[in-house]
Amino acid sequence: MKISVPRRLVIPAAAAGALLMLLIPAMPLLAASAQPDGVTAWWVWVLALFVFSFVLGIVAVLAGVGGGVLFVPIVSSFFPFHLDFVRGAGLLVALAGALSAGPPLLRKGLADLKLGLPMAFVGSISSIAGALVGLAMPAQNVQLLLGIVIISIAGIMIKAGKSGYPEVAQPDRLSQMLQISGLYYEEFGKHEVSWQIHRTPVGLLLFFVIGFIGGMFGLGAGFANVPVFNLLMGVPLKVAVATSGLVLSINGSAAVWVYMFKGAVIPLIAVPSIGGMMLGSKIGAKLLPKVDTRTIRTIVITILALSGFRSLLKGFGI
Amino acid sequence: MTDMKREGGYADRVQLAYAKTLDYVAHSVIIVMAAGYFLYLTGLLPLSVPIETIAGNWHLSASRLQAKLHLASGWSCFTRPEGIFHGDIVSYISVIFLSLATLICLVSAFLVFIGEKKRLYSAITLLQVIVLLVAASGILSAGR
Image (cartoon, rainbow over all chains, first blue to last red; front, side, top):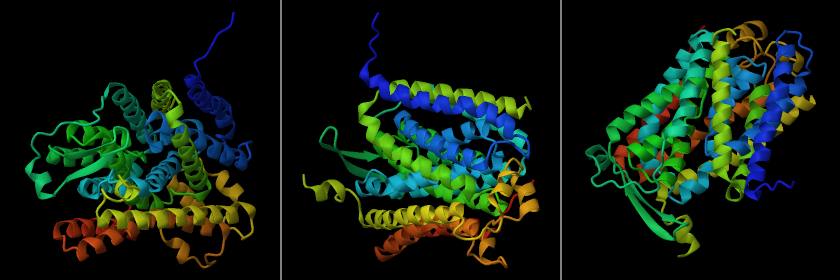
């Protein structure tokens, strides 16, 4: 009997399969290297981290999530590095991804400085506070909370809807005072889209909370920035995604210094993670129009939930 | 619609300035980071701490690893007696460069806001720069 596989499923299935194939052998290796005099050579881990980050970069773009939110739970669960170094690298991974994607989005008016700067300002203050709290807490407690946060994020990703062009009948007073509105050219429909926002005070409050969580766990916070911009404040989806990167880069730049002064940023771990993720993201962006993103998003949510569950177990010392 | 309109027509001067600076800085970061890591792994420059020693201890928390190995942290790479010409230190400096990238872009945006006399956004950008400078100063620290 001949089984035919739709072509659109081949690439996402291959990418997700590669991710799983990297994860499964990592488990016994983890056990071996858990001892200080572990038997696995250092370069195996560094190479595995680069390859893993590369695949993660592809999958993250295809699934429409930031790299940081996948990087921290998975690497902390399946690699032998202490959570401190994974969180430090995670912030840099998210920062590097946002920086490399930024220029064209700013030029097209999709990433909007007037929208992003006030949100990033409150978010950067709370992300520093989050990093300070996260580094002061016992690692096991952070791991436990990380598990809860990651499982919640998987839940948000399943539940949260999205709106391409939300309708905002009346902008609020604060957004008018801050002159937050914009216009961009929608290439898909070949038309201009003008936008304005509402519920700015609530948005600022939520960006404060999101910044704290991002700094505490070393996560990029695109998973939360985008729904707040889009569903709460009425920002068009493309502007929300692009401006989320801008906010993320500022928040990450603030929190990462706390990790650097704590000695939680080691180039041996951070640089291959950043390089792999940036290269993978570029490949992912090229594959994006050719794949069935729904399939890969489902697989990523599943992997995210599993890593969250594993973080929970590690947090309980299991 | 012309390409000019599509690419630049929807972004104001400050966005274009931010994008231009970011483009330049992001590419520089990639080059510096790749070169630094190459020098680190190939051993073309001596190392202040051997890679095997770091790998044998990377399961420890940041505090315990620092107490044991005294790796570069914050700005300490510029005040170490052995100098900066070590593979691991050069690679660490490339990470510092990445961490400063956003600050450089914000300063460029601040200058444009000031030039255009946009007081509100000049103030917000200046406050943001101050927040990043405070973070980068190491005044705030965490302990476990």
